[in-house]
Amino acid sequence: MLDRARQVVGSGKVLALQAPTGSGKTIFALLVALNVTGKALFLVRTHNQFYPVYRESKRLGKSFGFVVGKPNVCPFSSGDVESIDIDCRRCEINLATGVEFGEQPASLVSKLRQEGLANGFCPYHSLLFSSKSTEVVAMTYPYLFLPWLRESLDFNLEEYVVIIDEAHNLDTISDLGERRLSRATLSSAMSQATSELVRNILSKLQHKLSALPEVGERYLLINDPPTLEADELELLQDEYEALRAKMTEQRKIGRNHLGSVLRFFLSLREPGRKVFLNGGSLVSKNPDPAFQLDVLNQKTLPLILMSGTLPPLNYIQKVWGLTKDIEYLDVERALPTTVQGKREWLLAKDVTTSFQKRSDVMWGKYASYLMRIYHVSRANVLALVPSYEVLRKVLGRLKGINVLPEDSRTSMEDLSRAAENGKVLILAVNRGKLSEGIELTNGGRSLISDVALVGIPFPSPDDYSKLRAEAIAARTGVANEELLVRIPALIAVKQAIGRALRNPGDSVTVWLLDKRYDSPWWKARLGAFNPRKIVL
Ligand code: SF4
Image 1 (cartoon, rainbow, N blue to C red):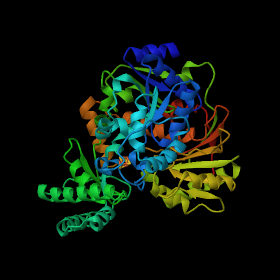
Image 2 (image 1 turned 90 degrees about the vertical axis):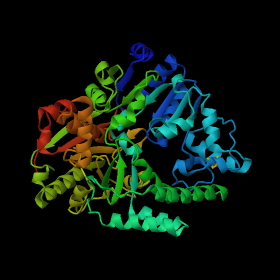
Image 3 (image 1 turned 60 degrees about the vertical axis):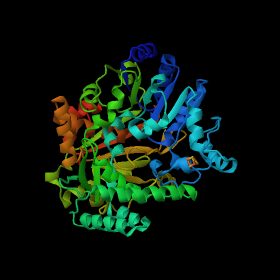
Image 4 (image 1 turned 90 degrees about the horizontal axis):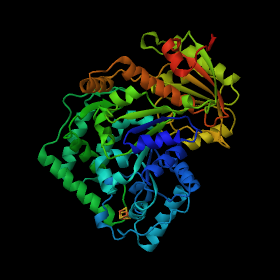
């Protein structure tokens, strides 16, 4: 398999590697990359995912480096800043020094912050400078997919094989480039503005935002969004630049809300951008994922996409717009023995989250199922619902069990603490803050024994999905229900199940709580050919 993978990447094709957690895909991809070009650029979603890359690089005896965003390592940054707001040109310690990557990324970052300040060097530029000469470099997606950040790196990408870990996330890559504008941001920007003229501009915008309807989680297209005249933008830009310079000079870099407002309006000049209303904010984004992913079509960019839930080949080609030749390698199918844990399937046919069937009775039934699952489960339960609205409906009906519902403040530490205090049912939203990142393990084994899928997590049928479908259809001539609705839901379902299978020795009971799972399409793709039917 390794030889074949080397040939594929060496010949300029994309290697799409479908391999479950625990199958050794990190070391496999590194071996392929290092054999082909001698250098690997490893792209991950979060900084926490640097560690396995560091560990496997050490195992292979290869030098490892990494880059984190300026906000994380700049000694003057408060952390919640955007990289673009840190103006290094005015910094007194804008000097790079050599970094020894001899320890774990997280501890090295905090050490560099202290040492940079004490010894007068820049931790960010030092990491960037030193990473250029290591065989393996880890960084997060924005460094490849945001053009301005990619260019700021000044890496010669042709020297590397680019490995995209957890590549199923490319499906939501448009989120990376989105710009949001809320009334809260405008208020904060007003308090940062020094000019009366700018405050008036911001106040006018606030009134316009207040007049927009309340739409909750859905995306509503705004055909006539608020705009700023060229002279208003110029005034805002001047205020922003002045604040940015002042923060660096004073060595106290906090969130620059004027910058957030400015960038929202500047983004509207980019081709393909649409403006939506979502959760009380205006959102500017390009609904076509191919726009942001086009960098992957560069002929001279050797590429490995890998994930435990990689979409099928035609999805990668049509929806993501990859035009290069792709070889799809499914490790689970290629190996004689399973590398994934065991799954037991149960199916409830008397419930559904289908919009036409939603009712108080239905939410009551779901709550009853979840309480029952909690009582019979061996350990913790992960219950995934399709939206925050459904979460609230079900949560209000759960009684007598230990529940940890997801909200905007829930952290992984909260989850770990809750699990330490006895059995817990984690009630989270598919594609929400927790569904991707939940990692409840002990000694590498999962602490989640049961996954309950409340409904099917189809993408919300709103203006954003509609425009995404239109963009894909215009580009490819194909935009069917399978590509646009069912495959994204399948990836979300497999992700949820994967939260309980962190090791080949793990086993999970999967509760399919929606009658729509009782179809050949779902059964075949989940490998749930004969689920046990359950009723309340
Ligand atoms: S220490 Fe100075 S040069 Fe380095 S990131 Fe911070 S502001 Fe920029």
